[in-house]
Image (cartoon, rainbow, N blue to C red; front, side, top):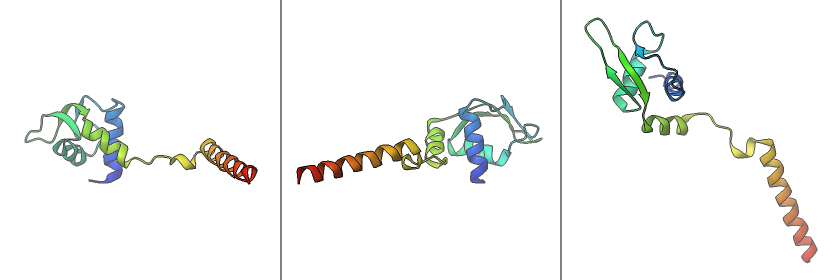
Length: 102
């Protein structure tokens, strides 16, 4: 399973944008979807047959949400400009108080 495909499919599931029926016509990586279902990150009804792999009513599980949160690219708090300003202001205030007390 490609990590980019996993994240993409889990995001679609979280946003409830996965098709109701996932099969070869859905345009998704079926091996990845199957792996996510088998791993417990997506819950779906398996409608696979001799003609191919398929799933109905896919939904993200709590484990899937946790995986997505742990592996999605997030902006670190210190990369946000307002947070940097707040931290720098706090440091300057502490230094100012330290010199004022001396």
